[in-house]
Image (cartoon, rainbow, N blue to C red; front, side, top):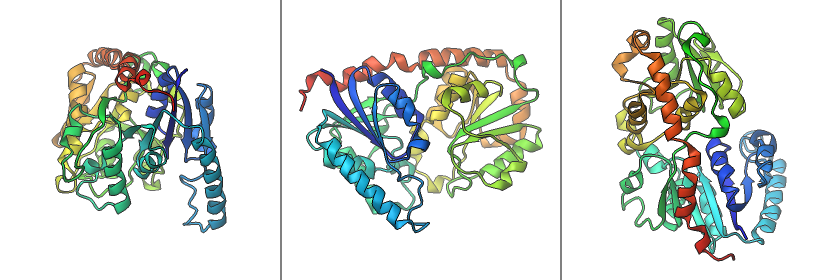
Length: 377
């Protein structure tokens, strides 16, 4: 009999889907989403045989729009359904965060289950020098202290950088799990002659119109590119200010496979952020990794990152699957890209997505969870 796994998350993302795609062969999975069915693409999980319960919380603006009755109604709906789910009991529960109160709530409710904590980003690092809510700090500490397993998304030694002042003791077993490349979303690599004319860069994912930690804000960055005749395309998952439309081409979000097929016509995927060191914890830029660079690899395009983001830059350098730049390179980016051996970069992309293939990692992850060791509740 397969072990029972309950997963709970607030924000939909591609990485948990990739993980559950494989874990469905080992677990009987139930998923609780705090985002509505329409935004969550519930059907794709049901096709995997995963039981899904979606609730209308994320992005509903209940308090801002004073929709108090709707909030109360959805909260009651959540409580009744959750209590029904809780009666089934689960061998493992998996909290995907942020926000960290998702993991806190799940672990509190299922104290007898083995707890898997998946901190998408370690907020001690990401927000170390910025003001944080007390509930998020308390929740993050609780999750790290009480998890039996911690899925580490970034550089292999990142959990060792958490100080005792932040978390007195971490007992959970660390399981390394990069975003990796997903066979179902890998598309054929297009040669340079089959791409758009000129130089076209593309960015996908959440978009910060303004961030106090950024040394160079995105509009300023895209102005630098535009002056050089470099075209930039955005496929944002969050709203973008209208004033950017003169600098970039904004496209509608697409399902992952459709998106990757679309991305193949561009020359480079970009993940470029220059930060103010005084506002950012150095542990963050040393260890973090973005899902987007693996999406670019799946789409068959080289990646541009800045050397400040050490771990991501090391991946690009190792496989020669893109270009690593510094701030001083920005005014000359077009010349730098024109000098690249693009065919060689495409070969690096091919090697990277073979070596960093998720299918190769799942058995290791399942073995590290040691699922057969635990009795059913």
